Length: 296
Length: 273
Image (cartoon, rainbow over the protein chains, first blue to last red):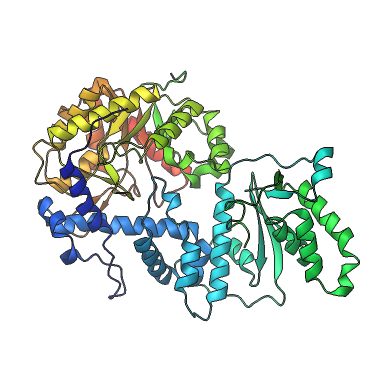
């Protein structure tokens, strides 16, 4: 590979130029506007006036492109959240997120990483906070499923069966378990074919929260409804050994449900393996990745 | 080394997600497809599966935005490894990227940014491009940018800078005639003088695309319109000067249905006449 070092002045120029690109756009007039008067003077000094525009206006083209391209990337990654907030308000949060966490990767699809966590903090005591956080987590889970590599499903052997109780099932990166308190998955599907930037009304909360397994398949992402206790068990299984998950679920259910629980749990467990929710067995604690955003 | 080839006068299309349903139903006659490398470097299954399906029927070339030949920082080894793997996987006849920088000091701006045109940077970019081509083991083409600024530090014209990098690197021109036109209007130079600096025996591919005119007259390379008449005229001039060469239409925003994009691409034949 090339050993040549770039000249020092190039690094300085790129630092000044980059600062201009990342200058926040002004929102005070109700549209997003570049503010060239506030640009880094060193960047301005390096650029010539042109036949059509002065140096600052020429730099403003890049400044606007930086923000609009990244707003687009975040809107694409969080489409449900963007529509619930409306693009104007969403872009405000996106802009603050990007100022705190500028993109580091050559892959623009990495730029939105962590936005759901940032939004949860930034929403403060917004009346719709819980629903918006749920929406952002669903978007993040969706995105993680799409980006997941192909992994073969767990096909237990006789030896696996013998050690199953004291092992942990390794979650498939192509599967997420979602607890939904607003009908947001349905809304997400409906909005997929409805373009727009205006905020859409938040639907009424569900009478009862419901669990889903989201499974990435060749044709897209499939929603599989789960029974309430089944969802709780699968969520526990992501983080604990099978024995510990079963014990935790048993401790959580009321006395009248306990008698039927072992049979149900066995059925749910078998079904989850058949459906490819796991990739294998592990004895070590779950990694950060295993515990990541794919459980909502 | 690639086993696939593209006809010297082939017409190709930039592969975009909105076209997948129509493409996978009709499999139209297209000389080749170009994909954005970065969209397929990760492990995600759906893009890989779609790329495999396309690659089974058409030659696929790679067009990157993440190399940063003019970046202050050294080339990213992990990125290059992934690019080489992808090029091998699709058996790409060639790979291209831009004569630009994008990231600096740990931040990526996700834009194709210009640098001053000075001999010092010819040497830097050429040495890097040479190394990239060797590592890829297949032709590597360097694309000229559309730009909105000029630097006081520049001591060369853009076309002399570009041609010098390609020549010294032993690489290829990935000539974008829309970019030449956009920059010529923004900076007030003669696009014909630009074409005169190009050694057409080293042109790997020519890009055509549309652009947008801002209220102040600045042209922005948006790839969201049909190819304007002035760009077709420049394309025709390039063809007369150095054709045949593979020609590829890029359409990245406000993307119309695929038949409309294919109809736009076919206008290249008329421009060549």
